[in-house]
Image 1 (cartoon, rainbow, N blue to C red):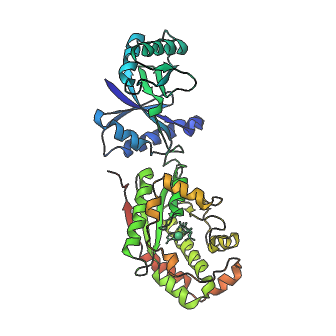
Image 2 (image 1 turned 180 degrees about the horizontal axis):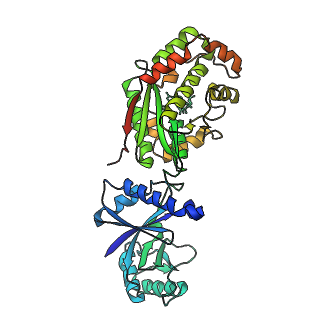
Image 3 (image 1 turned 90 degrees about the horizontal axis):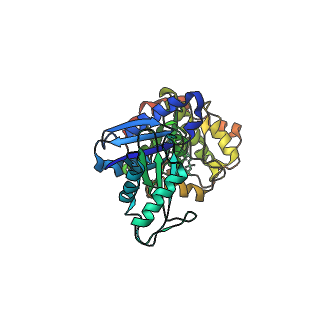
Amino acid sequence: MKEIILVKYGEIILKGGNRSRFENVLMDNIRNAVKNIDNIKMNIMQATIYVEPDDPEKIDLICERLALVFGIVSVTKAGVVEKDIEKIKEFAYEYCKNDLLPGKKFKVEAKRADKKFPYNSMEIGQEVGGYLDDVCEGITCDVHNPDVTVKVEIRDYAAYVYCVENKLIGQGGMPIGTGSKATLLLSGGIDSPVAGHMIAKRGVEIDAINFFSFPYTSERAKEKVVELASILARYTSKINLYIVPFTEIQLAIRDNCPEEHMTLIMRRFMMKISEKIAIKNKSIALITGESVGQVASQTLAALNVTNSVVDMPVLRPLIGMDKREIIDRSREIGAFETSILPYEDCCTVFTPKHPTTNPKLHTIIKSESKLDVDALIEKAIEGVEKITVYPNLI
Ligand code: ATP
Ligand code: MG
């Protein structure tokens, strides 16, 4: 028996004249996502990508991996059979018998893309449904509320059979590589990995930056950030992570600026340094995990103060989300358990007791003027460490 994987994609279908460019990027990403599992053959027809592994044993693993690739809306393992109604009936039984157990309600759904096939969709449904009803003991046909939906698709070169309930839901979104590159400010917290996932999902390639305050933040805190980047890399294939030494800047702020302005001045440094690293690496936007009002440095007034040091657009996909919603997404993408590991972030090492929540830009600029901002930034950038992070899968 031959089995293949049917990959359906979403928004790309709306792409008109550019569609084949998007399809090609998606196929490259598919090949890349499974390259350490098996060689595959791929064909694209009628808005479906047909993936055939060299090694049939690897098919489940490949399906799981493909469900993480942006642009794909569903992944289905399907049996392949000759376009002959008798063969299709017998095959549907063989292929689905483990799902069609006594007591189950079922229906057959047919789709005839090849209009030359002598039975129409309804007739295929009746033929195959009638046969299954006869040969499988204890099952009943229920078209409104089935436990098992046997799908038969008649396409150009063959017929395909699968159980709809075994379909894996994909990530949706757009293929990475179709939407430029942006740089994520990745802390060790809950929010920023979710923000990165949301923008990557729109087809944007992601670099990441972490500000690190050795020895105030531990080696374990850095490992946690690398781990979070490798969770994001499950979806993006790999991530370049830039670790910026931040201790000297934080100490300079602590020693020279009013305590209540510490966090905001620190965040302005982060944004400015991130923009410089982004430009160097051909990123055209920054991404943060900020959400209005979540903490003192994320009131609208505070966001304006930090935003004003950069010219690049700053994407804040969580801006209107509640913590609850962000946590749900963090769990969905598999980052939550790592995000809550108790290793301190550099922001939490130097926190004022009473941070300003309604800052005026000119006051912050005045407080900042005690520092040699350019020299501090230059020195931090000289000390950047680049780590290439791969997915933490097999
Ligand atoms: P998170 O859960 O992502 O840490 P947060 O709610 O703790 O966010 P802040 O600490 O104010 O919020 O940080 C806001 C955003 O600034 C983060 O979402 C992240 O994008 C960025 N950021 C904060 N700390 C760092 C850091 N050490 N390195 C890189 N980016 C950071
Ligand atoms: Mg944080």
